[in-house]
Length: 194
Image (cartoon, rainbow, N blue to C red; front, side, top):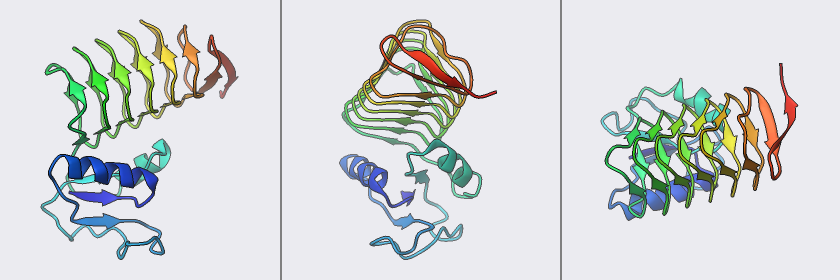
């Protein structure tokens, strides 16, 4: 597998790849000064291999995905528990000890971080990052480009819109509109962009 990005998130993805018995053929990054990086992205190099974008920032991950010509793969740590009915699209990463329950749909280039629990019938849109230890109860819907901070809880039947930021440790008890920042217990909207 190939990796685009050489920061801390890449280290975790490399750990997942190695734990699955696979190996990393090359790591690309735009910052050539990073230790161990020798090349910026080359669409010709290892053209038969899959690539994963190892960058936590949703906006940067989206921008880079538009430049990539390699096939996108998925990285799933072997300790993750995933029901056979779960749909996982390309470019997605599911990290250590995460649980995905029946009927869940995970779209493209999503990060399901360490020990996330996603209950039944949830849907996660493209370029979402679900932080470590987050709990999504049943029938939760997360819009594109949204970040859910570490340790947050989202109660059943809630929708969080596109381009939202949910602060770490929040308890979201009602739906959140697009372009909002929310935090607290219970979660309150502190800013909405028009």
